[in-house]
Structures are given as structure tokens and as C-alpha cells.
Image 1 (cartoon, helix red, strand yellow):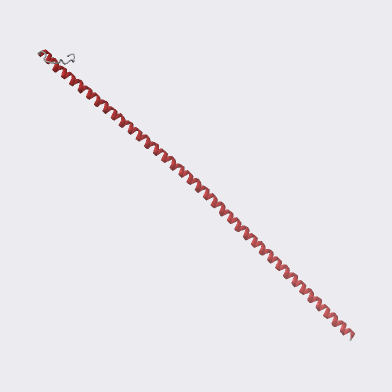
Image 2: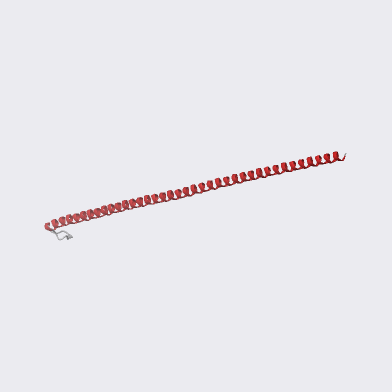
Length: 151
């Protein structure tokens, strides 16, 4: 291999062959540098692509997990709301049924009391009428008997 120096001017023939081999060495070095640069660029591009793919996969996984968690939370909240609504409806229905039963019982008790009071009033009126009729009859009979005795 040569020293890599290119002589200037008109040298001998050995100098000229040394100059052409120096050009070959320079070209080889340039080719090696270009190949190294291309390899480095390709490696950097591949690494960058792998990093981008990994980042995209991680982002997709995180988004999917977040969506699943949010959906589960929404389902849980909806279930809790439905359970609370069902409990409230059942309690309201039970309260309404109890109120209806109480109102019906009050009406029945009121009707029973009214009927009892009416029966008592009718009995009292009948007794009073009977007593008055008996007294009137007795008085009339006594008056008639006394009037007949006097005559």
C-alpha cells in the first residue's frame, strides 16, 4: 500500500503508479465512508421506526385500557343508578299500597261507626216511640176508665 501522498508535478513512472494507487485508496476510503454513513443512516432509521412502532403500540394499549376502564366505570355507575331506582320505586309502591290500605281501613272504620251510630239512633227512636205510644195508651185508658167511673 502507498503512503497516500500524491506528488505534484511531473514525477517518474513509479511516482505515477503510486499516484494512481493513491487515487484508488482515496476512492476505497470514500466508498467505505459512504457505506458506513449509509449503514449508520439505515440503522438510525430502523431504530427510529422500531421506537415509533413501540410508542404507537404503547399508546394503543394505554388507550384500549383507558377505554375499558371507563366503560366498566360507566356500567358500574349505571347499575348502581338502576338498583337505586328500583329500590326507590319498590319503596314508593310499598308506601302507596300502605297508604291505600290505611285509607281503606279508615273508610271501613268510619262506615262501621256510622252504621253503629245509625243503628243506635234507630233503636233509641224506636224505644222512645214505643214508650210514648205506651204512655199515651195508658193515659188514654186511664182517662177513659176514670171518665166512665165518674159517669
